[in-house]
Amino acid sequence: GENASTEEPEAEPIQNSNGKEFVSVEGTSDEEPYVGKEFESEEAAKVFYDAYATRVGFIMRVDAFRRSMRDGKVVWRRLVCNKEGFRKLRPRRSENRKPRAITREGCKAMIVVKKEKTGKWVVTRFVKEHNHQLVPITVNGRRSMLLSQTPAEVVQPHAVCKLPLIKWAEWDEKDVKIRELTAELQRERKRSAAIQEQLDMVLREMEEHSNHLSRNIDDIVQSVREIESNPVALFKRQ
Image 1 (cartoon, rainbow, N blue to C red):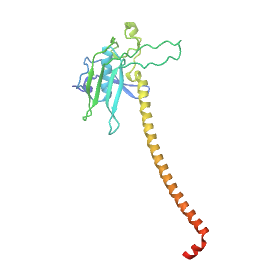
Image 2 (cartoon, helix red, strand yellow; image 1 turned 180 degrees about the vertical axis):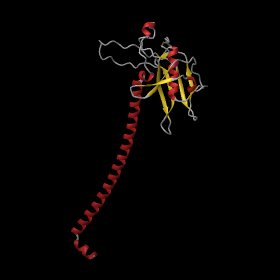
Image 3 (tube, helix red, strand yellow; image 1 turned 90 degrees about the vertical axis):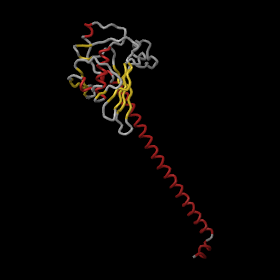
Image 4 (cartoon, rainbow, N blue to C red; image 1 turned 180 degrees about the horizontal axis):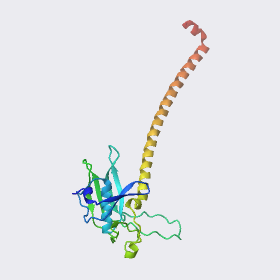
């Protein structure tokens, strides 16, 4: 398939709250994802699927990833519909609080991209079908995202114009932060386990050394007692 650089028109860099640049694509392409489609980078795949999501009528969410065992870099990424999965049930803190709208409905739509040895990212899986209503939305030819929590809600044109333009990175910022903190916690746990193992080893060595010294001291004390109890024998030895 064509690579991302030939599909995307001129774009301007946009910074999210973390200061990292992302690309906002002017205009859209009519092409939909397919297995075997190539991209120059992971970011290009995200931008393409985000534009496709906006055109079709859903919101993309950056989902699971896998890292290389060799250098730790991301080599596999899953991009899903934001209605993928189901929200975990949690006890309500207050009966007076309004329950949050259901935003996850178990949607299976996704693409999976994998980094090849050539450096290109290739689509290895594409699930097109959604299990909910799709609401295409565009504002002034720029890709945007629908903020409505209710999938069945009809968005009027005058209301569409008032919707803020947000980047997928901003929409998914909390999920990304949670994953980053979780990964950092796992690294700290591994580091802590390694330090604990080294500490245990040092303590074992100290204990063995202490036992050895204790045995030597016992031998010396025993020898002194023998000398004190039988000094004549000592003189005979000499």
